[in-house]
Structures are given as structure tokens and as C-alpha cells.
Length: 576
Image 1 (tube, helix red, strand yellow):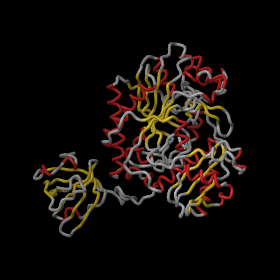
Image 2 (image 1 turned 135 degrees about the vertical axis):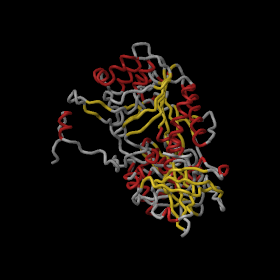
Image 3 (image 1 turned 180 degrees about the vertical axis):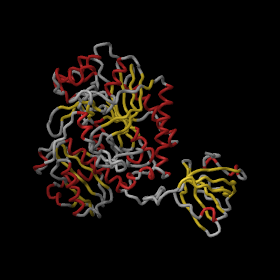
């Protein structure tokens, strides 16, 4: 089909040129004898002037049309448009296809609810802001390929149908038609495969990998997602992180023209939790956590005497709006974290006020004001209880107030590595020892001695890259010693039989000269979300699921026929 160029390839230099353009009608304005059309293609919008209104009386929004005409200079330029200096005076208009009235406004600003947008996703994706997200996503991939190939990485595809390895998140299972009662699993990540590629001697591997996790959804999580998966041999942690920083620099520069200053700073996990209440701290604003245990060492308040942790934050300038209802909501938030409540104090006229004040000595009041640098009009929030409940609660409240008070400057980026994660942690509910990252994470050499005596003291070679409070990627140095790997499995309570059943092929591979290796994965969707300036990961995925795990467009997941179930040997119990 005849087409001279895309809309935004034209400029003031093309005045007088005869062109043929194709696109969608974004807007139609009828001025009586003249009709103006905003013609939209993937590159952008150009104005078309139709001097003979009879040629366009039947043309409506979202019609696909072909325009033949001449490029003219506009009498009144539009500086907001890339093609704002010019317009095309139409000599011929051909309607290629018509369109019904659309159920949403196809523009950057739309009034459609998200469910409507997802149901008519093919229309939602026509919006220029949506196409911008996918340009950014594409540039991330192009930058990744270019950077890693220069460093002699090789791209290798790993299987989509794998053996089940139910560690961490729940897996999606795929029944085998040929082997009734047996199932494949969709990969949560290519973790063991990429390590096996290091055993195989590839030394530097990467893959833009599809991954699947059957988890509860939220704004920055999807059941099927994409990660930039990377593994290397013969690099220590600092060498590997330096290499990955180069990749991040390339991605930021090539997508949004932002010059990330290197090297990135590194923050130990413990410091991140102590200061920000999160292992993915947003460090673009203050409101840091303070340890108040020393202040309350002589407290008479019973609930604080036996508390493992007592921590607090000071929130500036919100005392006047902190009503009883707000305090009740803060208490409800504490209960979500398994805590009975929290204390909220205000500083007014130089004094701390609030129902909790009666439990404070004068010395404790003075110490609190000094430690938290409390000014008139500020509030103090104090929480006490188990460390792994108190700290994330205050971290969540800190983030909530940071956004509410506008403390985060728009269009700013703060990147850091969080390092030195504990090798193990205790499950909040059961108290059992579990792996903080995954069971293939290498313990720090100096902490191997604690594996037998107190595994919770062991620090690992693990690292997450945090961007604006989002975990944008993470990885570890891997265990390459079969004896250490066996010990880790034992600590996690896995018997030899369970190890053989779940990881037999992988453990066996470690016996054949495994090199020291390290790797990580960047969340491609999350990077696109951050760089695109949206806080909704569904915006950067072409056909996403909603929070119920449903695709409103195709209505997946759907029921299947009885014959399909019979072929797979699956029986669905009848609903009671």
C-alpha cells in the first residue's frame, strides 16, 4: 500500500513536498467549509487540512485513512507537537477501513476504568503514552543485547517445560498428555539451568527470559513476567557488580538520556532495615527509623519491657491533620503486620501530647524529642514487638507519608545496591529456617564456620539493585562446592531423598568441576515501569492480567472441554 513516510518524519524542510500518509483519525474538527483531521500513526500526529469538506463528511474517529497531499507551513505553529510547524493539505482521501465508536478515549488522558482498558486492550494500546512505554521497553532490550554481546555474553534459551521444584512461590503446573499423572512446571526462573550452563563452560550467558509464579497479584507484579537473566563464571562480587552497573548505565542513557553516576553506593541489608525499614529502601527522602531501645531501657510500660525491638519515626508537619480517625487507621495498619498497635504522639507548643504520654517519664520525653529531632507540628510514631514485624511496619508508614507529603521529587532517580543479606531467616509463622534468597546462594567465606553452630549468623554473597524503592533486580554468588551445597540443603530440612527428587540432576552436576560463578536477574517489566514513569506494571505489559489473575480481554483462565480433560487424565471434582 502506497505510503511516503511516517508522520513525524516530515518537518519544515519538507514544505512543498507531495506525500502519501496512512493512519488513524485521532480527532476531526469541522469548521464548515474546512475540516481538520489529526492523523495518528505509530510515530505521532500530523494535522491534515481538507479544504473540500465534502471529501470528509463521513470520516469519523479511528477510521483508517490514506491521505495524499502537499506539505504546507502552518500559519499558527503548535509548539507542543513534533509536527507543529506544518500540515498536509489533502488532495485525495481514501477510507481504508471504518470503525465503531470506541468504548474509551484514545488519548494520553482517558476516562476509562482499568477493566475497560484491559478488556479493549488493542484500543488502549493505541494511546500515545502506552506506545511510549513499549518504545522504552524495546530500547531496554536493545541496550541489553548490545552491551552484553560486547562483553562476549552468549544468549541461550532454556526450557519452558521443566521439572517441578516447589521452592518459594507456587508453580504453574502443566499436565503431560503422554504420561498421565505427571506434570511439567513452568519456570519461576531459569536458575538451575543457567548455573548448569556455567558447569558446561559457557562462562557468560544471558537471556530475555519468560518466568511464571502463581502468586497473589499487586500493582507491580504479574503471574507471567520477563527478566533479563545473566550468569557469569570466574568473577568475584565486586567485578560482577561493576559489570552490571555498566549495563544499567547503558539502559538509562539509551532510554531516557539519564546519566547514572557510577559506581553505585552499596548499603548492607542490616543498615537498610535499621534506617528505612525495607530491604528496598527509597532513599530520595528522609523520615528514617530510629532505634529507641536505649531510651526505654528503664521503662515502666509493660509492653515495652520485653519487646525485642522498639523503633520510631518522626513525620514533619502533620500533627494538625492527625485526627483520632487517622490514628485508628495507623493502628489497623499495625495489626496487618501482626502487631497489637502503636503509639502516636504530637508535639504542640513544645510538648509531646497524646494518650501514650502518661506512660512516658520526663527523661524519656526529652530523649525522644532529641533523638527524633521533633519540631512543633510533627508527630512521632512508635512501634514495639518482634524486629521482623516492627521494622517493616514503620518502613511502610515511612513510604506512605513520603508520598502523601510530596517529599519525593518527580523525575529523580536514586540507585543503590543492597548487599550482605542474611543467608537464612526464620519464617514469621512457623519459625522454621528458610533461605533468604534461594538454596544455591553462597555463604560468605568467613561465615561458613557458623553453618554448624548458628546458621542465622551467616551472611551471604547476595545483592539487590534498588531503584526508587523498587527491587529492580537481584542475584548472588552461587555455591560451587558440592559439600557446602549439601550442608545448606540439610539446614533447610531437606533429606537426601528430597534433594535427589527435587534437585538430583543439579547436585550431580556439581561433581564435575563446577567453576565459581555469579549471576542475577533484572525485572524487565519493572525497569520499563520505572523508566516509563508509571507505578502500574500492567501499563508496560502488552496483554496483562488484572488483580484477580484474569485477562479481561480473552477471559483467561477459561474452562476446557471434557475431552481435553480426558486426554490429560484429569478429573475435576464436582462442586459441593
